Amino acid sequence: MPDPIFLTGGSGFVGRALITELTARATPVRALVRSDKAAATVRALGAEPVMGDLGAIDAMRAGMAGCPTIIHAAAKVDLWGKREDFFRDTIQGTRNALTAARDAGAARFLHIGTEAVLAGGAPIIRADETTPYPAVPNGLYPWSKGQAERDVIAANGENFATISLRPRFIWGRGDTTVTPQIARAMQSGAWAWFGGGTHLVSTCHVRNVVEGVLLAADRGAPGNIYFLTDGNPVVFREFVTRLAATQGVTAPAREAPLWVAELTAAAGEFVWSTFSLSGQPPLTRTALNLILREVTLIDHKARTDLGYTAHVSIEQGLAELAADHAAGKP
Image (tube, rainbow, N blue to C red; front, side, top):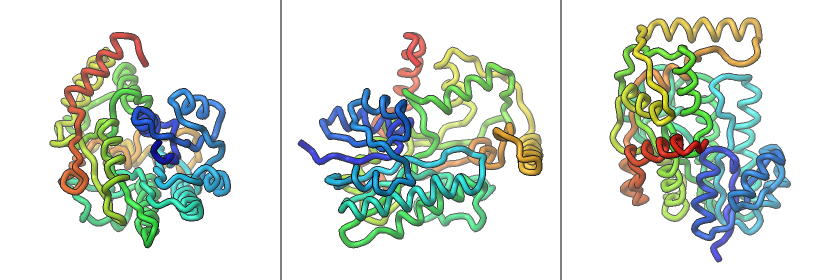
């Protein structure tokens, strides 16, 4: 039987897809969980739940015992919140996972990163792994994920290989966040195509993320970073229109100038920060720059070094979502 793999963030979108693929390969999975609900989710997928959180180094160390490979998918993924929460969950949480992994004798540590680490307020155009981090990250999410990734790469050393994967715009079967949020926004009348929505974006189907992560576990060069995408960029408006259609939602035609989004984001952040409002602004500058401006990436390194193929096409992924919706599946 293959050696077990330890996974943080196992009840999340990417985590569930990883467990599904690993158990299909008869690879045992131990997944860190913070609640009984999360434990039930990963157990139903065939993983062994390990109770604890990213602050519980002892629990992680015990769960990681005998696991040569650690996949760290947990982080604070919101685009708005308190700095201390991003630091605790993403930066310190990653440092704790690294400490536990080294203490447990793990050989490889795979970090699920994001293209957002390059977000500095301008479009991200045909970036590759040599593109530098921005001098000033565009929000707390890019800041925290960027620092976590730096910590992961800095931890690489003899007998402890660390690698970071950067998938972009993760979508596909099992998504409980992005696709439903888009559908709800369109149905509520809150959706507009700012700037026309004709900019290019890179995307990555969740099973392509899994492909890249598991290839990196086997073949990734220690201390390296790899972008993962579906291949050629797509026009944002065309892709999102088709994505919404898989949920039975017709995309609205309403358009608005991009400056309206910029003003809305700046005003919303000012009000929420000034008055310490709960929830989050209707639009943040981080979301604006990652969604409403071009973000295109080059994944040549993953294809060359890892043998990554992005085996699930956009057409196949959209067809699966449409079939699930027609069958009444969530």
